[in-house]
Length: 149
Picture 1: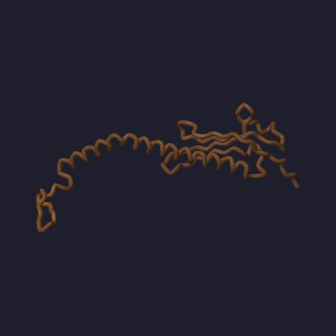
Picture 2: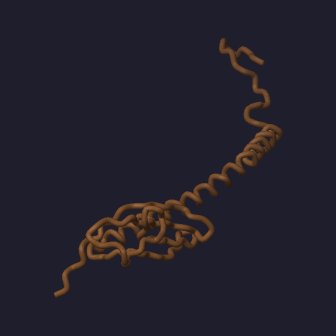
Picture 3: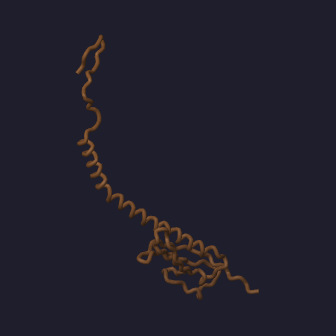
């Protein structure tokens, strides 16, 4: 309602109707609650996937470390390449890293029949006890053994 005072149009003072009422606030909270309940399974699934990816990333680092360890000893002979280590990741999952020289079929290599210098196929795997998480095969050069003095 408008009224005129001394040539100026002013709005009459009426009770204010600005803002939200109690019913509107309760409805908004209810709708937000429904959205939160609908998105909760996605949040849980995302956390589960992130945990699994964390374990796989740790297994990949262990695999690289196992291969680097086998390659780092230039005087290593075929039978000295075997690795069997246990690690625990940040989540407490126990991981086992195994590395060994293998033949072309993947069977353990009979190092007595190998004559250096030459390359051997090296298989490294990391598992969590239930399943194999990562696997890699590489070639490692085995030098001729040092001459006895």
